[in-house]
Amino acid sequence: MSDSCCADACGTGDALNDKRWRRILWIALILNAAMFFVEMGAGVQADSRALQADALDFFGDAFNYAISLGVAGMALAWRSRAALFKGATILLFGLWVLGSALWAFFSGTTPVAETMGIVGTLALLVNVGVALMLFRYRTGDANMRSVWICSRNDAISNVAVLAAALGVAQTGSAWPDLGVAAIMAGLAITGGIQIIRQARSELQSVKKSGIAVGEAR
Image (cartoon, rainbow, N blue to C red):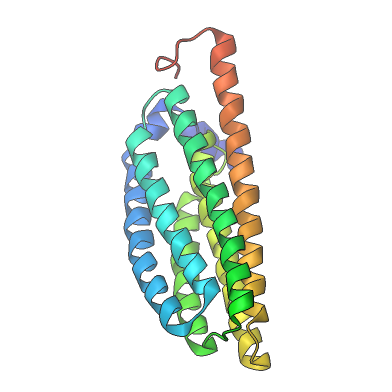
């Protein structure tokens, strides 16, 4: 299945310029930007660090989709550079989540489980829908793969948020919320490393081939 998808769409100039790929990115951009405001507002109201962290993840993904739209169809070297930048932002997001979890640990507040569950379900539906749209592009170049990794990690994070909501409701403790924050940080760091590694590999291939940056395809 993945081989046939790659033959049709992954990592080629035609794929990066096709209307379907760009349309999916625009849909993902709009949905992620909207969910940032929804989830951040709910996270602040419910005092949930997991929801707030997930909201910032939506914001970061919307920014990443915008970058992808800007470099789609450009030379491989430029797409790989954009992927490097995205990988770095994902790593920074992971570090931010770790710091936020530590702050929440010392603040000692307990989030509202009901709000976490409702908003977490909405976020999961959005991310699963986007991930399904992007599934065929998961084995493309570093830029395409980075978009897929973001959506995949987001869906996993949403399941963790729902589990945390159940844990908070059952225990009345903030520990499940903090645990989700740690999981999301791990996913962000791992995804960022994967993206950076592939992007650097592609840039090295361009240099070895002797093709000037900005002309490689």
